[in-house]
Length: 193
Image 1 (cartoon, rainbow, N blue to C red):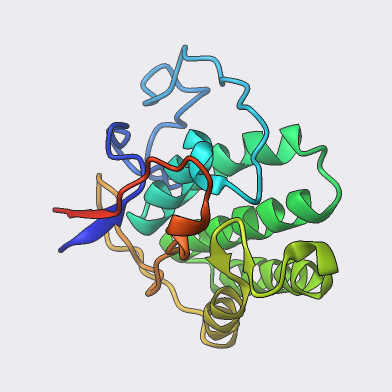
Image 2: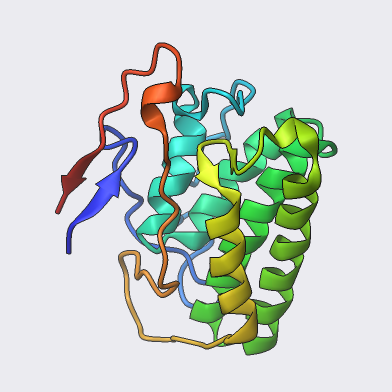
């Protein structure tokens, strides 16, 4: 399957963590990130999201079914954003959306719905704020994000198919739009297999 990578220079982890199925990436000595302290990312600029490698890595991880790992990538940015405010709310929405993906893989349908609904609340909060610059925030269409997340909340499902690598179970991808509008961006959108 062809999909877009935003940070193709960064390899995917050895496995997509699903609680109860794989070693915890950080706390288990067999974990894919054990012994590697979390790096403190630079703040995400909503007007130039392509300048944030952690944000782009989170998109790649989410789009490839590494939901727990995407959650972790965005959580560092959320902490740097101060955990409150417009940007923090947007990042928390992405974190909740990734958590819904984890719940799909865990087989917890109520968790899928709960996390998707919380993501909707946060994305709606962002979309109503004039500082969100209209229909696009951090390079993502708020309208599309809301439609897709509403669909997930209204039609929750589970997929516990055993896998090692990421398994994309959420039917949509997070796709940056208007990349030519970001000053100084060197990003090029190339499909990879």
